Length: 144
Length: 144
DNA sequence: AATTTATTATTGATATATCAACAATAAATT
DNA sequence: AATTTATTGTTGATATATCAATAATAAATT
Image (spheres, each protein chain N blue to C red):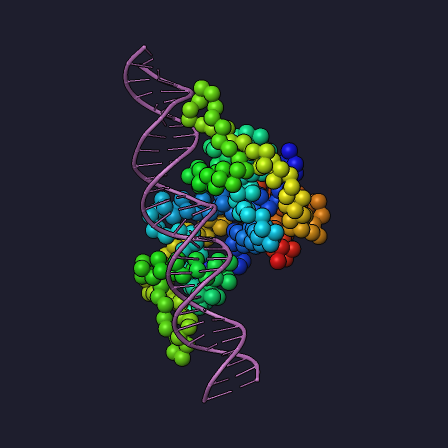
């Protein structure tokens, strides 16, 4: 065997942590029949933060491919949680905005999301959280 | 806006770090025309570690769905990097093993993979690495 | 031993990830 | 102003993620 145990690799543990956390949240979503995926939620949340945003910006902020954003927006538009608003004098971009329904939806479920975030950091001191954040940012910087 | 900036969420940063790192490695794979994906590499590496392994175990160790493993193994089998070896007196499982070609492949590219791992931790003290590992394991524990 | 239960791998359906090619069009250059 | 270049969003192709249903069969129970 070359290269040791993959469980010892930090990048593997980072990915594992992400997968476990996403699975937990998705299970909770499904348990209450939320009807959306984690990825869909993240888009809704980003749109809510910025009120209106282009698909390009959405792709950048979510670190997803524009093609993937197109398809997820189609789904969320069908669910009537958001809309693509045409921009006057700009026929290349749209303003992506939440519908009233979408705003209500995000507000309604934000509490649960916050509980998931809190749960993930149970037993952490605020110093540990900041340390973890900085170490993650350092890796991001290293890999750019 | 409810719930603050998503960039402040640790789980978001963990996922972001994973995505950035995977993109880096995949770009390097593509640059040298390696012909496989990161996920395919991870399976090859796990199989190499265990010499022979069932698909169920492979799914557990990689934190992937058995259905997804089936499909990726099909691809890797077509590339002749591994094979599904029947187990005597057990017609439900296979021993997944690397072919000679697969073993050579993993050996050949392990150096590059180690460089990626090293690059991700540039500027880290060994204490920081261990701290990061423990914080990640703590989150994994919290979210189980 | 026969029946029931649990496990393993596969397939289908739907969502996401990525790249490449493309159309539309905005922005920059000449 | 006309042409060139760059940007934005979409679509197609292929890989991955997940769940549900299924077939085969191993393991447990009666």
